[in-house]
Image (cartoon, rainbow over all chains, first blue to last red):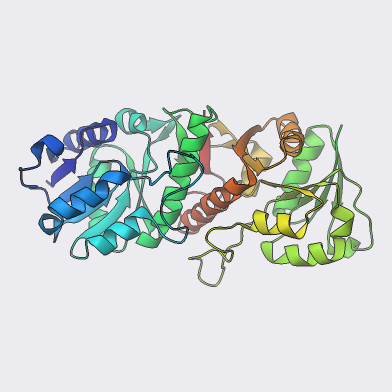
Length: 191
Length: 191
């Protein structure tokens, strides 16, 4: 059984918390009102907006050393909805990994709309969580609790692939905002 | 009825040719053995590998002026399967548009595996063709023959979005090569 901490209690934090519990794993859920509480999980999911990552690094960076840290963020420029705010050849996850050199950073969940984590399906397909990272054990730990909750886990490759995962999520959000994909659907992975 | 020329008779060229015919439109299909034959279509689909675009620009660039030119290519680095060969902040389609300033360049079909164009479905979803471009009429002309063939056409935005479409296709190919998505499936669009 894994001990998983989730920072963030918004729609994504709640949906991922639901998955962890469903899979029989232990979940600690924290938000900014629990700033004084220590993170206890071996896996820590940062279920926050991208703009909140810097604050977490500043306040909890040391505490995250040695842990698997899951970045679910999408660094959209919400003013234009036409760009990401990270360099074109980088990703939010790559930047976070540089900020947390003693953590094992994994990109996951950023391509999933919250509703599809709760229902477990995208259209008639099982919801697939795309996972990218440079540490095989860290990715396996994330895959394990995803699969325990009945979802599909897909190893999308090294952390370098976070760039494509963030690009995919960006496209998916622009299409949903334009009512060309639904917020309860999106891109389904067909095996 | 639209007159559509397809340069390329590989799997994608054949699949798109099948769609055009199915939708009741006229198709002219050319490959390098027809280099002397003039392109007659108002819409010209470049169903070739990315590496062949430069040659087409050189030999048929003037002929493509005034036409809708559809770029279906994915500029993968096939040596590493880990990068695209275009700049991170650009796309193959943006480069082609610069080379063909008198054509209306549209990105389409690059996110579709050939098999899903022929069957019309990705899993249980209707195959969706994502279309990006700066000219609304050009996109509408492509959407029109896609929909006439029974597929779904999705306007993915301006030609700037070709970057995300190429990124999506790159990810999709790496996942299919790793047997995590099937070559007859891939990412389905759930409305």
